[in-house]
Structures are given as C-alpha cells and as structure tokens.
Image 1 (tube, rainbow, N blue to C red):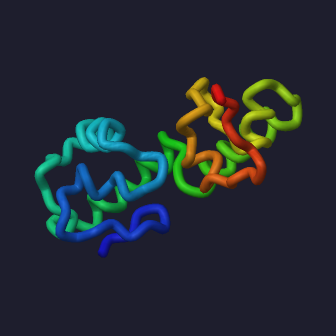
Image 2 (cartoon, rainbow, N blue to C red):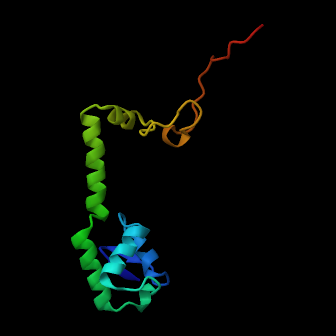
Length: 126
C-alpha cells in the first residue's frame, strides 16, 4: 500500500478512486489532480513509480486542505456558529437538522432513536 499524507492508498484500485480515500478529496478533485500531473486515471496505484507518488503527495499538500487540518476547520466553523448563537448554531447544539429538513416525521439520524413519552395519547372523537 502506498502512503500519501499519512493515508494508506489501496494498491489494487485505479488511482482516480484510490485518491478519494484521503479525507477532503472526492472524485472530481482527484480527476483534476491527475490531469494537472498528466497521470492516466486508469493506472492502478501499484503501477505508479515512487517519483509519481511523491509528486502526487506534494501537489495535494500544496494545493488542497485535507485530513486533520480540514477536520479542524470544519469543527471550528461549527463551534463559531454555536458561539454566536445563530439559528444554525442552535440547531447544531440541539442535535437537530441544520439545513431546513422537516422533523415532525423524519430526521431520525440526527435526533436518534425514538423516545416514547408516557401518557401521551391522541385526542379523538368518543
């Protein structure tokens, strides 16, 4: 396995897919990097020379925010929203959906498993 920026890149996958194992690099970004460095997308990771891997690592480190630094940036942005107590920050703080999704019937991923409230019954016609 090749290591780029502290991440093990799988040998048996095409390099365009293997680069997506790095946090912060998706398929489109991976394609842009390979096009800039003139490396074919169909090449497997194990077929790359050490020099090509070194240039890949250097290009990613120079041009993109990835891994730990990106994680830290995202956490700081969320913390900033919480600190200024804006609407989005309050939604983060309460563990509710942040981007306007409905919550009456869905949002179980954010809200967690249902907590049944005792004594709550629907009022109907008797």
